Length: 308
Image (cartoon, rainbow, N blue to C red; front, top):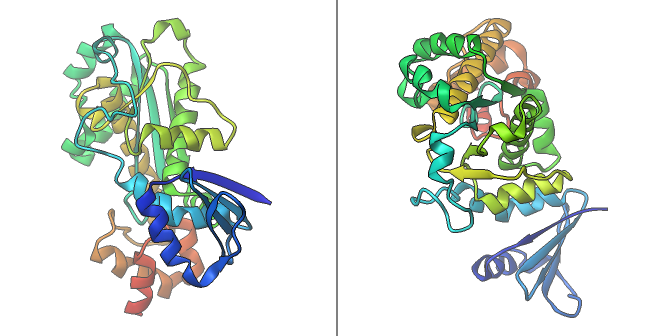
């Protein structure tokens, strides 16, 4: 029997007890309550820890921890749960990591990590490397070629849609997927360099650092030493900015391939035009085809079926 444990605030525990009113069972000593659903048996303790056990414990836990991840990018650049990266990191040689495609219905998640030395930073700035959100896609593709041509270790990973949907069905949150991708990409780059060369690793923060570390630990992995997190890191770190450009370029390339296979344009994002495209795709290829090119748990799927 698989299980997962999360420590949740008192307000969340109260909401959980009310939510599971019709699923409550006899609770063991020291527990606040126990409930049973089709996914898992949920046991909440006075310490705030909640044990999820059963067929799909992660899927049940996601109902309560997903909001924590979505709200985990506070206005402060450095949350209290993580040490701020030292100035020497941002101005010195370091690894930067960023991802693309997480908010897009169509297309995979792509993640890139790049090691940039202090000496290479001025050149990257001359090439126009900065936050990819402030660059046109055509410019991003051009700069990415220049980055790849330079002698700097990098790693680009792609989580294709079929695997993404499979992991979702197994109870993985998107936050956990991103954490594992960032971890693997940065470790790939670490394997290519002498660890003494770098001041550390900077990850563009998408969840609280302690949540990130729990995701990594759940797969029996360890976060490398001197790993830091920063919101909007691509605006402060040239290495993260370079990674964001490589990740975005890889995402665009994969989108081009998926559109060619589908025989139609696949819009980016998750707005109304995406619903329309998904509906046309269902009519042309069948509903199962979405699994090959879309993140099917997005609300766009149900909206597409309503359009049919």
